[in-house]
Amino acid sequence: MRLLGAAALLTIAYEVFWPKSSQESSTGSAPPAHRPQQHRPVYQPPPRPPPPSQSYRSSPYTPPVYQPEQHQPDDNQEDQPNEYYLVLRALANKERDEMERCFNESREAHSRGEGAAAKDLSKQGKNHKQKMEQLNKEASDLIYLVNNRDCRPGEIDLHRLRVKEAIARTDAALEEAKLRGDSEIRLIVGKGLHSEGGAAKVRPAIKGLMRKYQLAAEFDPSNSGVLVVELNGCPPIRHDHDLDISHRRSSGRRRRASNIGA
Image 1 (cartoon, rainbow, N blue to C red):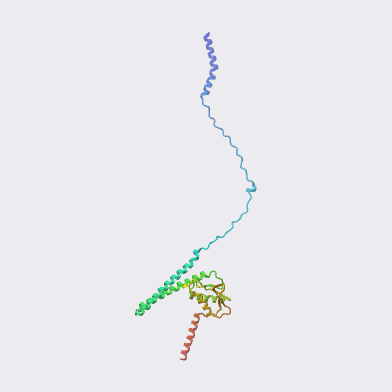
Image 2: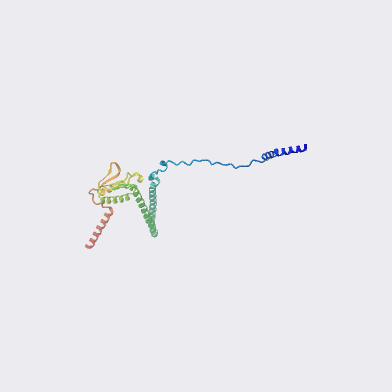
Protein backbone atom coordinates (compact mmCIF):
# COMPACT_ATOMS: atom_id res chain seq x y z
CA MET A 1 0.00 0.00 0.00
CA ARG A 2 2.85 2.31 0.78
CA LEU A 3 4.42 1.52 -2.61
CA LEU A 4 1.22 2.27 -4.45
CA GLY A 5 0.84 5.53 -2.67
CA ALA A 6 4.38 6.54 -3.52
CA ALA A 7 3.88 5.66 -7.19
CA ALA A 8 0.72 7.67 -7.35
CA LEU A 9 2.48 10.69 -5.90
CA LEU A 10 5.27 10.38 -8.46
CA THR A 11 2.77 10.15 -11.32
CA ILE A 12 0.94 13.26 -10.16
CA ALA A 13 4.19 15.15 -9.72
CA TYR A 14 5.38 14.15 -13.19
CA GLU A 15 2.18 15.29 -14.87
CA VAL A 16 2.22 18.60 -13.02
CA PHE A 17 5.89 19.58 -13.26
CA TRP A 18 7.25 17.93 -16.41
CA PRO A 19 5.40 19.78 -19.15
CA LYS A 20 6.29 23.18 -17.63
CA SER A 21 10.00 22.41 -17.17
CA SER A 22 10.33 20.88 -20.66
CA GLN A 23 8.78 23.94 -22.19
CA GLU A 24 11.09 26.23 -20.23
CA SER A 25 14.18 24.22 -21.25
CA SER A 26 13.17 24.15 -24.93
CA THR A 27 12.42 27.83 -24.88
CA GLY A 28 15.73 28.80 -23.31
CA SER A 29 17.89 26.70 -25.67
CA ALA A 30 16.36 27.83 -29.03
CA PRO A 31 17.67 31.19 -30.47
CA PRO A 32 15.12 33.86 -31.07
CA ALA A 33 13.65 33.88 -34.56
CA HIS A 34 14.93 36.76 -36.86
CA ARG A 35 12.23 39.06 -37.95
CA PRO A 36 13.04 41.46 -40.78
CA GLN A 37 13.00 45.09 -39.74
CA GLN A 38 10.07 46.95 -41.10
CA HIS A 39 11.26 50.30 -42.59
CA ARG A 40 8.70 52.94 -42.32
CA PRO A 41 8.60 55.31 -45.30
CA VAL A 42 10.10 58.68 -44.55
CA TYR A 43 7.72 61.46 -45.30
CA GLN A 44 9.03 63.96 -47.77
CA PRO A 45 7.00 67.04 -48.44
CA PRO A 46 6.30 67.78 -52.13
CA PRO A 47 8.55 70.43 -53.75
CA ARG A 48 7.32 73.90 -53.31
CA PRO A 49 6.47 75.52 -56.69
CA PRO A 50 8.22 78.83 -57.41
CA PRO A 51 6.17 81.97 -57.33
CA PRO A 52 4.53 82.47 -60.72
CA SER A 53 5.37 86.14 -60.73
CA GLN A 54 9.13 85.43 -60.82
CA SER A 55 9.48 82.08 -62.59
CA TYR A 56 7.10 82.33 -65.51
CA ARG A 57 7.47 85.96 -66.39
CA SER A 58 8.89 86.28 -69.93
CA SER A 59 11.63 88.88 -70.21
CA PRO A 60 11.90 90.80 -73.50
CA TYR A 61 14.72 89.70 -75.84
CA THR A 62 17.53 92.20 -76.13
CA PRO A 63 19.83 91.60 -79.12
CA PRO A 64 23.54 91.94 -78.43
CA VAL A 65 25.01 95.28 -79.32
CA TYR A 66 27.58 95.03 -82.08
CA GLN A 67 30.81 96.76 -81.24
CA PRO A 68 33.27 97.01 -84.13
CA GLU A 69 36.73 95.80 -83.39
CA GLN A 70 39.17 98.58 -82.75
CA HIS A 71 42.13 98.15 -85.07
CA GLN A 72 45.28 99.67 -83.75
CA PRO A 73 47.62 101.09 -86.38
CA ASP A 74 50.33 98.63 -87.22
CA ASP A 75 53.68 100.32 -87.59
CA ASN A 76 55.00 97.33 -89.53
CA GLN A 77 52.30 97.69 -92.18
CA GLU A 78 52.92 101.42 -92.48
CA ASP A 79 56.66 100.86 -92.89
CA GLN A 80 56.33 98.15 -95.55
CA PRO A 81 55.76 100.54 -98.51
CA ASN A 82 58.70 102.69 -97.45
CA GLU A 83 60.96 99.65 -97.12
CA TYR A 84 59.90 98.35 -100.54
CA TYR A 85 60.47 101.81 -102.01
CA LEU A 86 64.03 101.81 -100.67
CA VAL A 87 64.62 98.33 -102.08
CA LEU A 88 63.45 99.43 -105.52
CA ARG A 89 65.71 102.47 -105.44
CA ALA A 90 68.68 100.35 -104.35
CA LEU A 91 68.10 97.87 -107.19
CA ALA A 92 67.80 100.73 -109.66
CA ASN A 93 71.11 102.16 -108.46
CA LYS A 94 72.79 98.79 -109.02
CA GLU A 95 71.44 98.70 -112.57
CA ARG A 96 72.74 102.25 -113.07
CA ASP A 97 76.23 101.21 -111.95
CA GLU A 98 76.19 98.23 -114.31
CA MET A 99 74.96 100.44 -117.13
CA GLU A 100 77.80 102.91 -116.64
CA ARG A 101 80.36 100.10 -116.45
CA CYS A 102 79.17 98.54 -119.70
CA PHE A 103 79.15 101.86 -121.55
CA ASN A 104 82.65 102.73 -120.32
CA GLU A 105 84.03 99.35 -121.33
CA SER A 106 82.25 99.65 -124.68
CA ARG A 107 84.02 102.93 -125.40
CA GLU A 108 87.37 101.43 -124.39
CA ALA A 109 86.80 98.41 -126.64
CA HIS A 110 85.86 100.68 -129.52
CA SER A 111 89.05 102.74 -129.05
CA ARG A 112 91.08 99.52 -129.28
CA GLY A 113 89.40 98.58 -132.51
CA GLU A 114 87.36 95.74 -130.97
CA GLY A 115 84.12 96.49 -132.72
CA ALA A 116 82.28 93.27 -131.82
CA ALA A 117 83.11 93.55 -128.11
CA ALA A 118 82.14 97.23 -128.09
CA LYS A 119 78.79 96.43 -129.68
CA ASP A 120 78.05 93.65 -127.20
CA LEU A 121 78.95 95.82 -124.20
CA SER A 122 76.79 98.65 -125.53
CA LYS A 123 73.85 96.26 -125.82
CA GLN A 124 74.37 95.12 -122.23
CA GLY A 125 74.47 98.73 -121.08
CA LYS A 126 71.15 99.45 -122.78
CA ASN A 127 69.57 96.46 -121.05
CA HIS A 128 70.75 97.71 -117.65
CA LYS A 129 69.42 101.17 -118.48
CA GLN A 130 66.00 99.75 -119.30
CA LYS A 131 65.89 97.83 -116.01
CA MET A 132 67.01 100.91 -114.09
CA GLU A 133 64.24 103.04 -115.58
CA GLN A 134 61.61 100.39 -114.86
CA LEU A 135 62.69 100.04 -111.21
CA ASN A 136 62.75 103.80 -110.72
CA LYS A 137 59.27 104.06 -112.23
CA GLU A 138 57.93 101.43 -109.84
CA ALA A 139 59.52 103.24 -106.90
CA SER A 140 58.12 106.58 -108.07
CA ASP A 141 54.59 105.21 -108.56
CA LEU A 142 54.65 103.51 -105.16
CA ILE A 143 55.84 106.47 -103.09
CA TYR A 144 53.55 108.90 -104.94
CA LEU A 145 50.54 106.67 -104.25
CA VAL A 146 51.44 106.34 -100.57
CA ASN A 147 52.10 110.05 -100.07
CA ASN A 148 48.92 111.19 -101.82
CA ARG A 149 46.34 108.79 -100.41
CA ASP A 150 45.24 111.40 -97.84
CA CYS A 151 45.71 114.55 -99.94
CA ARG A 152 42.79 116.81 -100.75
CA PRO A 153 41.71 117.59 -104.34
CA GLY A 154 43.95 120.24 -105.81
CA GLU A 155 46.93 119.15 -103.72
CA ILE A 156 49.79 116.78 -104.53
CA ASP A 157 52.74 115.59 -102.49
CA LEU A 158 56.08 115.37 -104.31
CA HIS A 159 58.17 114.09 -101.42
CA ARG A 160 60.95 111.59 -102.23
CA LEU A 161 60.56 111.93 -105.99
CA ARG A 162 63.47 112.58 -108.32
CA VAL A 163 63.46 115.94 -110.12
CA LYS A 164 62.29 114.51 -113.45
CA GLU A 165 59.61 112.45 -111.69
CA ALA A 166 58.37 115.50 -109.74
CA ILE A 167 58.19 117.62 -112.91
CA ALA A 168 56.16 114.94 -114.71
CA ARG A 169 53.73 114.66 -111.78
CA THR A 170 53.41 118.45 -111.58
CA ASP A 171 52.62 118.76 -115.28
CA ALA A 172 49.88 116.14 -115.00
CA ALA A 173 48.43 117.79 -111.88
CA LEU A 174 48.36 121.23 -113.54
CA GLU A 175 46.47 119.86 -116.54
CA GLU A 176 43.92 118.12 -114.30
CA ALA A 177 43.45 121.26 -112.17
CA LYS A 178 42.82 123.35 -115.31
CA LEU A 179 40.22 120.84 -116.53
CA ARG A 180 38.43 121.00 -113.17
CA GLY A 181 38.47 124.78 -113.27
CA ASP A 182 40.49 125.14 -110.06
CA SER A 183 41.75 128.58 -109.16
CA GLU A 184 44.91 127.27 -107.51
CA ILE A 185 46.90 124.14 -106.82
CA ARG A 186 49.04 123.30 -103.82
CA LEU A 187 52.33 121.50 -104.48
CA ILE A 188 53.97 119.91 -101.44
CA VAL A 189 57.63 120.18 -102.40
CA GLY A 190 59.12 119.82 -98.91
CA LYS A 191 62.20 121.52 -97.54
CA GLY A 192 64.87 119.20 -98.85
CA LEU A 193 65.35 117.34 -95.57
CA HIS A 194 65.29 113.94 -97.33
CA SER A 195 67.43 114.99 -100.30
CA GLU A 196 70.83 113.43 -100.87
CA GLY A 197 73.50 115.65 -99.38
CA GLY A 198 70.88 117.72 -97.54
CA ALA A 199 70.43 120.10 -100.49
CA ALA A 200 66.90 120.57 -101.80
CA LYS A 201 66.49 119.59 -105.45
CA VAL A 202 62.76 119.26 -106.09
CA ARG A 203 61.86 122.52 -104.33
CA PRO A 204 63.92 124.89 -106.55
CA ALA A 205 63.15 122.83 -109.67
CA ILE A 206 59.38 123.18 -109.26
CA LYS A 207 59.68 126.84 -108.37
CA GLY A 208 61.67 127.41 -111.56
CA LEU A 209 59.11 125.40 -113.53
CA MET A 210 56.35 127.79 -112.43
CA ARG A 211 58.41 130.76 -113.60
CA LYS A 212 58.91 129.03 -116.92
CA TYR A 213 55.14 128.52 -117.21
CA GLN A 214 54.58 132.15 -116.15
CA LEU A 215 52.43 131.09 -113.20
CA ALA A 216 52.27 133.09 -109.98
CA ALA A 217 53.56 130.82 -107.22
CA GLU A 218 54.40 131.61 -103.60
CA PHE A 219 55.24 129.44 -100.63
CA ASP A 220 52.53 129.11 -98.00
CA PRO A 221 53.34 131.46 -95.07
CA SER A 222 52.13 128.84 -92.59
CA ASN A 223 54.06 126.00 -94.26
CA SER A 224 57.18 126.80 -96.25
CA GLY A 225 57.16 123.31 -97.77
CA VAL A 226 53.97 124.02 -99.77
CA LEU A 227 54.05 125.98 -103.02
CA VAL A 228 50.70 127.63 -103.83
CA VAL A 229 50.24 128.16 -107.58
CA GLU A 230 47.60 130.56 -108.95
CA LEU A 231 45.81 129.25 -112.05
CA ASN A 232 43.35 132.07 -112.84
CA GLY A 233 43.96 133.36 -116.35
CA CYS A 234 47.09 131.26 -116.79
CA PRO A 235 48.28 130.73 -120.37
CA PRO A 236 48.30 127.25 -121.87
CA ILE A 237 51.16 125.21 -120.46
CA ARG A 238 53.65 124.15 -123.13
CA HIS A 239 55.89 121.35 -122.01
CA ASP A 240 59.38 120.69 -123.29
CA HIS A 241 58.24 117.79 -125.43
CA ASP A 242 55.61 120.04 -127.04
CA LEU A 243 58.32 122.57 -127.88
CA ASP A 244 60.47 119.82 -129.39
CA ILE A 245 57.61 118.59 -131.55
CA SER A 246 56.75 122.09 -132.79
CA HIS A 247 60.44 122.76 -133.49
CA ARG A 248 60.73 119.58 -135.53
CA ARG A 249 57.58 120.46 -137.46
CA SER A 250 58.82 123.96 -138.28
CA SER A 251 62.20 122.59 -139.30
CA GLY A 252 60.51 120.09 -141.57
CA ARG A 253 58.43 122.80 -143.19
CA ARG A 254 61.53 124.92 -143.82
CA ARG A 255 63.34 121.96 -145.38
CA ARG A 256 60.41 121.20 -147.67
CA ALA A 257 60.18 124.84 -148.69
CA SER A 258 63.88 125.00 -149.50
CA ASN A 259 63.63 121.83 -151.57
CA ILE A 260 60.73 123.25 -153.55
CA GLY A 261 62.60 126.50 -154.17
CA ALA A 262 65.62 124.59 -155.33
